[in-house]
Length: 116
Image 1 (spheres, helix red, strand yellow):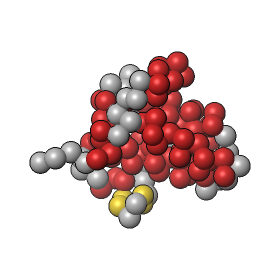
Image 2 (cartoon, rainbow, N blue to C red):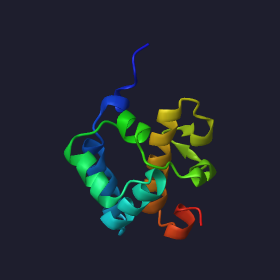
Image 3 (cartoon, helix red, strand yellow):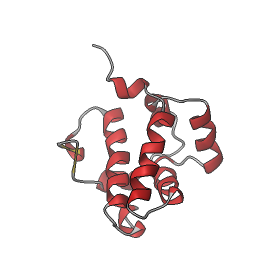
Image 4 (cartoon, rainbow, N blue to C red):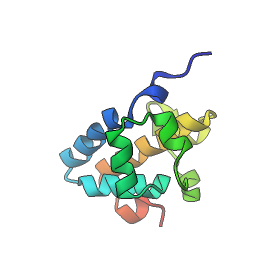
C-alpha cells in the first residue's frame, strides 16, 4: 500500500499556510510556533532547522522529541473526519496540528488550545 502524499510532503511547504491562516484572523506566527513546540517538543532552533532541511511530515512526527500526552484531549472534526477516530498514528498527529491551527484561527485562547 502506498503512503498518503502528505507523509512525504515537507513541513516547510505547509508551514506558511498555517502562518497565513493564523495571521488572516489576527493571530501571530509566534502563536503557531508555540502550538508546534507544545505538540512536538521541538525547540525553535530545531524547528527552523527541520523547515530549512525540508523534513517531511512522517519524519517530523516520528523524530519529535516529546509528543505532548495532552494531545489526546484534542477532539473535533478536521477535513470532515473526527481527529480522535483516526487510526493511522502519523495521520492523526498531522490532523492534531491542523486542528490546533484551526482553533487558533477561530479565536480560541492559547490556554484552551494548549489544553491548560
